Length: 146
Image (cartoon, rainbow, N blue to C red; front, side, top):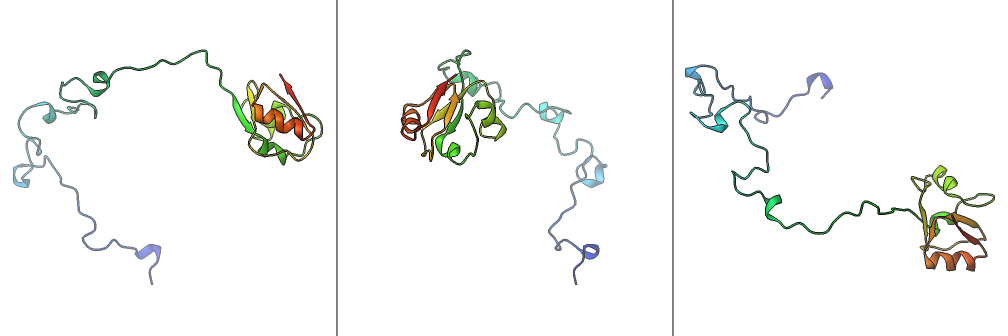
């Protein structure tokens, strides 16, 4: 019977590591298999993985494209199908959506029109898609832009 106290590896599955720098008789003494001179023989003598031997590196050979707009406004998105099964008395505000775990922040929330609403509900958000507005009003609800 195998228990934790008598577990063993299969024979030959694990090899002892080569012990380098342990004298002439070992076959890997003195220079420890690193050769004579050069960068790779020194301690710490290994360039970073993307070093290309002095050739112009890839990240400098490729052209730069586009830019990043630092004033971009990003919204937390929430779909109507995730709002449909929420049981809340009163209006659905971004703070309620955050408490329920549907959005991360409360400063910019956009409601998208994927799914259907069952009943009339008042939804407060910073933006609404056209389809979301149509579906909310069709269900008898109200969309309030903050």
